[in-house]
Image (cartoon, rainbow over all chains, first blue to last red; front, side, top):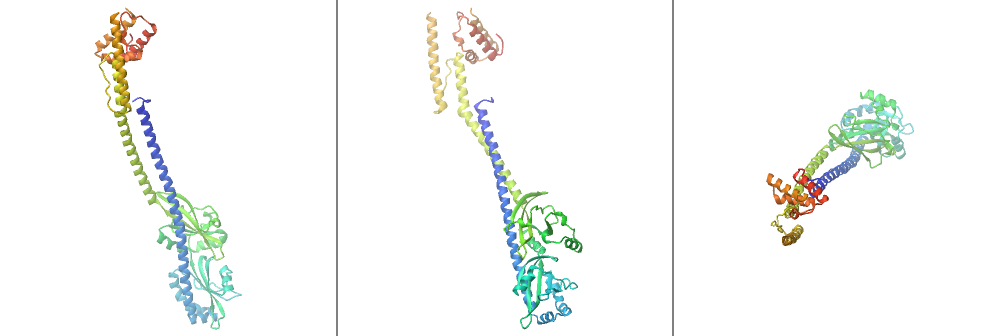
Amino acid sequence: MKWNSIQSKVLAALITCLVVGVSGILGLMQYSFARNSQALALESVTGSQKLFTILEAREISKMTAVSDLLIMNSQIRDAFAAKDRSRLLELTAPLYPQLKSEGITNWMFHTPEPDMAVFLRLHNPSKFGDHLNRFLDKKAVQSHTIVTGNELARAGFAERILRPVSDSQGKVTGYVEFGEELGQFIHTMKSQTGNDYGLLLSKKFVDRQFWADSSATWKRRDNWDDNAKFVVADKTTANDNIIRFTGDLATVPDQGMVLERFRDGDSILVRGIFPIHDAAGNTAGAMFVVRDISAVYVAMRQTENILVLVIVVSLLFGMTLVLLLLNQLVFKRLQHIIHVATRVVGGDFESEIKVSADDEVGQLEELFEQFRQVFVNILSQFSELQEKR
Amino acid sequence: MSQLYDLKVFIEERIKAKGLDAADVKGHIGLKSGRLLAFISPSTPDDPVAVAKLKQAIKDVLNVCA
């Protein structure tokens, strides 16, 4: 086959179609995967945020119910009103392990305003008399009602409820507080969604020395220097590589944001983040969400391979069919016309071009046959003339 | 005899010697040279351009120099 023949050109056009088709499909699959992974990441962020909100509400309800039961106990109420720390500890200490097993990690009694000092810490009874001066304390003093919210304190970032305790005359004798570390939420969330989570705390709200001390106390690595603007308070994976965020937590929008898709070993993962506000409305922390989309990626690659195979086979089949048809309907018949024309010029006046079909090439065959007959007649007349001379 | 006629005889001898399809070979040479071999007779006058074209056609088709 000559490079400049119609067959070569048709073949080149079909191969171009094949390459463009396969490239197009590959591009389309990549685009589709990028969109799907973005959608999955967004769904993970919004889903996790909703789950976090549900968990917060559930735990607030639980701590509120526990506090309701607690202040109904007249012995506890009287001991607190009498500021009898030993008696209060004696009455409440047996309850603490049970509450702790239910997730309530912080339990405190505070003296009433204006002093508002810690009267008893069930989770650390030897430490008392200090002033916390937190946002929730002030809010509870102002409203004398149950106040709830997240508060980043020396004990950690916890969801807390604070409620006034009154004596029989209705006078506020102090406040009782329950709290749950937000870090434990992420393990519940992981068990429910399968995603990995990281609880990030903004360094603006964490004391460096406290972080070093608490790291030593809890025998964890001091990770203060791992990230510029935040510390990882807790995470559900031992892999440090998957938590990557270079921005400022304060800039994370309320609805959360998708960060990017990345590869970690054989896994394809997507990252997202949503903010966690404290009771005062500050973005004190954020929840980092990592979703493994390897299964989606593998499925996409399989679909891609099948599509490429189907397209290649279809186009190869199409190419073969087109070339066969062209050969049968055009090239073979043109070759016959050329062959007969050559023989006639060579002196074989008996060769004829038979019209093989009523199509465009058939018209050409008919024209050539008529031309051949005219040519043969002229040649005969010329020969006769020559003979007469 | 003319040179053109000599070339025609040369072609016919080659065809015979090699057992080629006479109409096919003559047709190809005729189309390439632009001259019908049937019209070449011993009395055909020589034309240098026609001779050169015929020699070139013989070389192209039969791959020999006449």
